[in-house]
Length: 105
Image 1 (cartoon, rainbow, N blue to C red):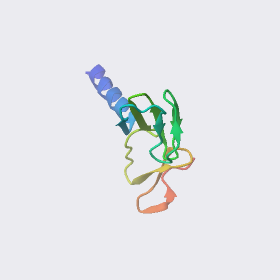
Image 2: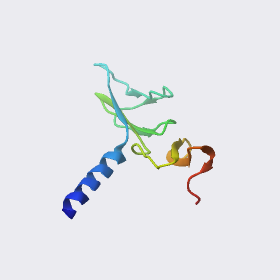
Image 3: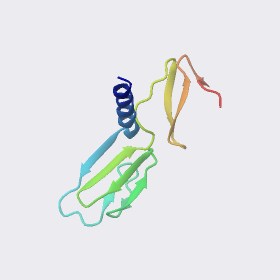
Image 4: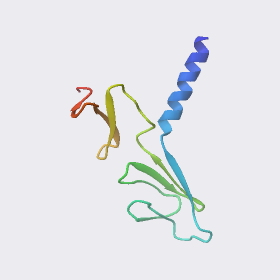
């Protein structure tokens, strides 16, 4: 029973760590690479980059794939999760007072 519980917890953590992703199929005959969906910068096939929106993107001849770098949905009772755009990590603030952090470091 302990093994089953451990396996369920592990699978949940793996699922949450991937966060949100999207795929965009490129137009047939695209020769130059991919266009960043946020800042419209160009990237050659085979490249990977991080966007200003905390997304890691990769460009392939058929598909542009972008995934969040901060993982999946996180919930802490009594707190609101906010992604810090500078660090691309969650910060937690009191739900009833967003000026106060939930955790002191």
